[in-house]
Image 1 (cartoon, helix red, strand yellow):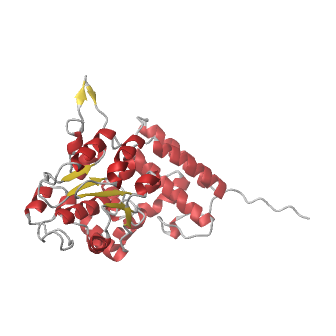
Image 2 (image 1 turned 90 degrees about the vertical axis):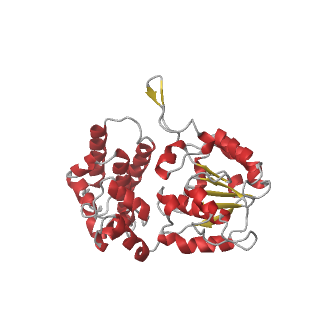
Image 3 (image 1 turned 60 degrees about the horizontal axis):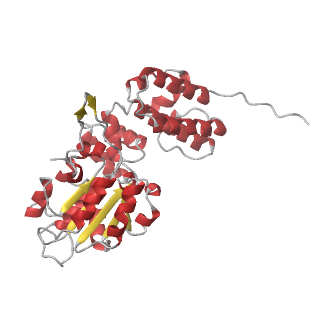
Length: 353
């Protein structure tokens, strides 16, 4: 059983109760920062809408986890629930989209491994349209969950519009995602928005400690800050090799050309870390507080123009992080670039009158 089906993260329990009481539209649009559990929250909504512990028409409460409907969802076989995910996310989230069976997973054809799609394809949305036209098998409702909603390409999003605006029968939609600016305005306008906030540290830090085999509160807080307050991201980055005791050393190691530990990290994590260094240095240069690193771990403010140019270069690199680069050469080039941007510049003397 996946984590998403087993339990809801502690910081999502009260928002779920509020959402069940206030979401009145047939289509909900969940949004907020990544790494707080949007998919888990969306699934919890779907479970609650389909839960059979209360008679229909008496409002909604968090799913009981014991009725036939909840057990069917746990087994991934509820006939009135359709979960739509990109192929590349299905395994990590523990769901195989019924709309893409036989099309997902790593398949080998003609000796080549199929690359899993990061998009939600139009065939999956066409299956949603067909699914919504059928009568609810258990007579309660039908629910369609789309995550991340911004991964629908233009054709997919347009295919969903009419059904999203005028769903037949008892169909409800829950769309979730982080970068809603990439979602069509016509899709957003047909949904009731619901924002998921970052959890407070007093809730996230103890949870993170349990995930890190009893790490100290100080180490858990460092990792939480490193992830921008997103506890699931903090956990995942730690599993990729991010160490709480090393994290504050990274800016000065970059400046001194001693950040060799980063060469052991995945390229995507290296780029993400450099982006956070760049952003915090820009904050310091503008007189603001840093977000990801302790203030005393950052070198003196760097030229803001150079930081802006560096940020643009890092964004380009991030878009192509999955390209089959030579890992060592690419990381070495990124570290040299970082050192060049961060090194102190001599202060030019003001001309005398």
